[in-house]
Image (cartoon, rainbow, N blue to C red; front, side):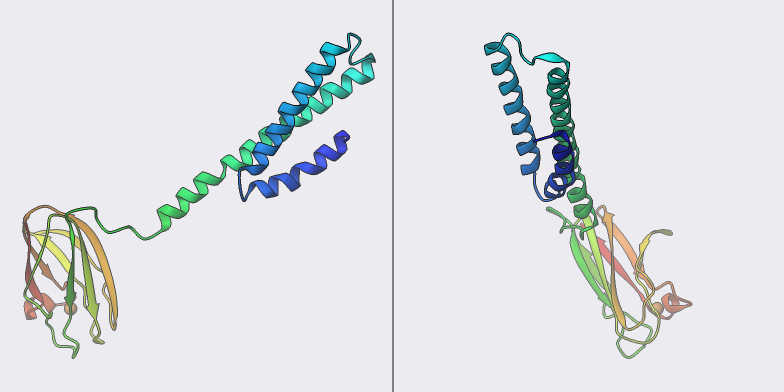
Length: 192
Ligand SMILES: [Cu+2]
């Protein structure tokens, strides 16, 4: 196998490397086998590699194999970050211990009220699931005292959710659209 063949092999093996680390192991194995071959021949033949051309060939092939192996290492090493990236984009898993989902719905006929005046959750990550099947825009905003902690999007005829970390305590949930809170879209969220 000549040097040109080796270089032609790089993209092919690199493509295979996208799928697994096998290409890296193959390239590494070939490099190791070549190193053993050179040293065995070198030991058994005092004149090896014989002449400038022979030396250049041995150095060239060795260098190509090193480049190939490093290329495989780079190609295969680039895979784990892609996986973790995909993982980061995936939906967050349910909170491990503690936390809870709180389901709140707006009146389906469009009246300015929620389906409940009180809700409760365990401390930790709390998912507020809000369902507004009416054509009137609403949201669920969470306050503690006068401090707004989080809010869902304002939606009509759809569902949304927001996740927040809540410590034990008493919170207020309400709709911040226009005067919906004053009209009655308000309730108490107890966490504890
Ligand atoms: Cu509202």
